[in-house]
Image 1: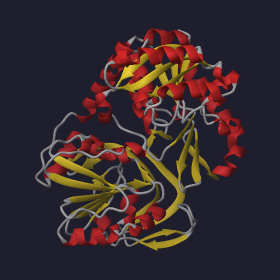
Image 2: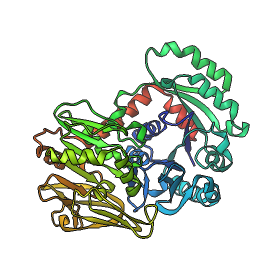
Image 3: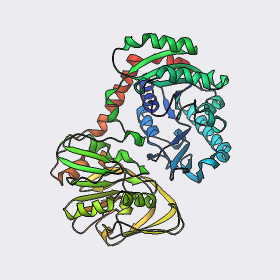
Image 4: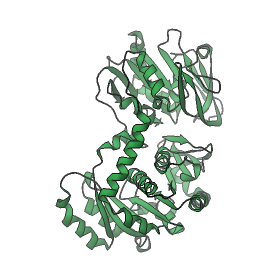
Length: 477
C-alpha cells in the first residue's frame, strides 16, 4: 500500500502545506491520491461529504487531490474546549469529552479507528500522503502516540522529517530529533527536507551536508519560502491573518476558542477592505464599520471571555455610533438575549445572558448539526456548511439572514445586527459582492479559482525544489 508520512520537527513547520503540495503534484502526475492525518487538534473543522467533521487542512488537501473530503482522512479530531479538555471526534462523530490526563485510556479505540480509516483510503487510491502532528521529538508522549511514530510503526509507513529554517536552528531541529527518539522510530525516517528558506540556497549547502552526515538520512531538498501560502485557508489559529487594504474596516474578535475562522479568508483577500483580527486586551477600534463575532467551540466560555476583554461595552458603543455587527454560528448565539444550556452540552449546565443585540434566544442540545447546505442570501446563491449545537428562535428570526433548507439566522429591525449559522458564505463571489455593496465597498471575483491556482503553483514550487520523484519512490511507487 504505497504511502508516505511527512512529520515535522515541531508545530507549524509547514507540514499541512507540504502535504497539500505533494497531493497536487501526485495528482498532476496522474495518480489517484488521498490525504490522511491520524490525529489532529483544531477547532477549525470542515463538514465532509459523508456527514462527518475533519480538520480544515485535510479538506484543503482533499481539494488538492481533486476529491471530496471524507471522515477517514482525519479519523481522530480533538477540539479543545478548555485548556486541559477536548471533544473527541472519531471518524467524523463526537464520541467523548476527555481531559488530557485521561486521554490515554481512549488510545486503543482511537488507534483501531485510525488503522481502519487508513486501510480504506489505501484500498481506494494509488497513494496516501500522511501528515503527522506536532513532533516525534515529544518523546514523553510516545507511549500514547497515534499521531506520529505510533502510527508510522503500526502501519509500516516510511517517514520524511521536515524542518523549518525560518525559525532558526534547523540543524539542531533535525539532528536533535534523531538524537532523542527511539532507534526503532528513527529507522522509520528515510529522509529529511528543509522548509521556508529565504535567500541564496547555496549558502546552506554546508549545513545540508552536516545534517546528512549526522543523521545518515538522505536530503530530499530545500524548499524556498512560498510567498502565496497566505492565500490558502489556514487551520491553525496562530496563522490568523489581517489585511492592509483600504476602505471598509472589518474587525473580527479573536475569541479564546475561535473556530472556523477561515470564514474570513475571502474578506482578507479583498483589496478594498481592511480586516483587523483583534486579539485580547485590545479595544474595538472606533473607526470599525463592521464587527464580526466568529464561530467558537464554546459559546458560553467565549461569551465570558468577550466580556472579560470589555468587548461587550465596546460593541454597545459601536452600535450606538451606527456600526454593524455580524455573528457567525457561536457568535450568532452570543448576540441574543440569553443562551440556555440545560444539559451542559457546551460546558456547565445553566443559562447566561447574551449581548442582547438580537431579539432571539438559544437553547443548547447535545446533538450536533453537521450538514453541507446551499441556498440564497441577499438575493445571491450561497454554499457552505453548518456545524453547531443548539437551536435559536425569537422575533428577529422572522427576518432571516439566509434561506437554506429553511430560514436561517436573524436580522435586527434596523438591519444593522445580523447572525447566521452558515459557514463558508464569503467564498461565494456573488454573495460577497452583495454583502460588501451594502457598505459601498467593491469586490474582486474569483476567490475559489484563486485557491486552486495557488495549489497548482505550490505543486510547481515543490517540483522545482524538492526531489518529488525520490519522495514517491520512498512511498513505494
